[in-house]
Image 1 (cartoon, each protein chain N blue to C red):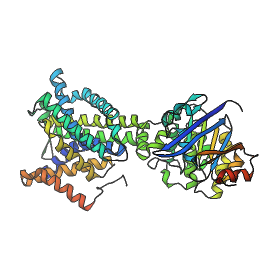
Image 2 (image 1 turned 90 degrees about the vertical axis):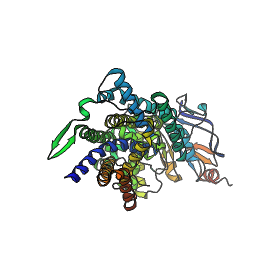
Image 3 (image 1 turned 30 degrees about the horizontal axis):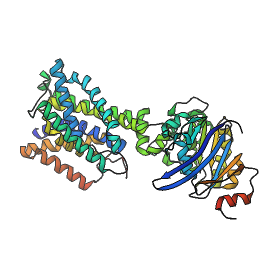
Image 4 (image 1 turned 180 degrees about the vertical axis):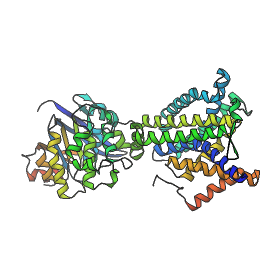
Length: 287
Length: 235
């Protein structure tokens, strides 16, 4: 029963990892951009949530109403103002620029919020639980998982059923020809980054309710996001959710064996899958 | 000649240090079909890429109905009313047949062309509408590429080597469909390797040679001898 508990808790944790990963996956899928600053943007969203809740007294979940559009606007401006200039045949410039961005965000957060760990207060939601078949499941992890499923379903719908998603796929296929169809790729890329950072905002707020955070934890969230994307297979959003769940379960089961093994077992699971299936479990992008 | 739809004046185009076009002058009248012929590397595709905005030039070098468009990006040129059927078809592989057509219509210009009109022109595409564009035969893919350009309801369509790599019978079918397209009041520029084909569908012809216009004339008036001289640059 305790093992089952670990697996269930890990699955729910996987929802949060899938939210870390979904934005990364989307950005890579549309513009082949590997965003090293993604983890720090998650932490930035958590701090924005903190500022909103302490300034307005709003519940952290309601703070999303402000933080999600704010992060989307930051994403659009960042893409149009900086990242579009780095995109081209060479993969290195965007890597270097987003790495620099990561350093800048971390130091700006240190300057503004100090290095003290912070946490958002979500009141009774933090400790509430429901009992299912002898297992006590936290309401917050359940809610996180449900939000992750809803976000991924929403992204999936946007990608495959809307004109915006069609434009994303067309630009991803062939930028020149998409341009001939009247699509300005710089604008489309801006919209993709806005959408990705909107998802990041949701992930950041849920992270900030679940655990304490400080400006330095972005790198770790980036790794979890990367691992979930790679396990699931590049370009496959539902695969990303599966990747997040596998990573979450590996971590909680590892922690069950020995508390020191939590992070290590997640990385080992990732490496094992990479050895057996180098393209991830459900790859969609070829070449 | 009446007021030209497209006026090109002194157009130069470069790929890095390599100059592909040297002072090309060209005029396309409303409603006419203009053919461009020339050997491989003569600059035909470069000319198409310049007109459609994939290669940016000086504003005054290209005018559409008097408006300078030479410096516009391809998406802005598309909104002004020029569509390109690119060499090698270049469909979007992750989009279905119908989505490829819909994305062509995204510029939102009013006109006779719609999904239904394209399906009427090429009925086979209606049957295959939900299939991935990569699953079609070469000829059917070419139909999608043409339909995708028409969906934008352009004033001017550029056809770049639409017969390249297709079986003769398919080429005939596609050229048979052309009058139905041009009859809708569009102006067309056709780049074609097959000189006989190019002359038979067009009213005027330009020949390019090493980035320069080497011949210009009415398609039914140019002689074989003029063409071979303009084509190869030998007497």
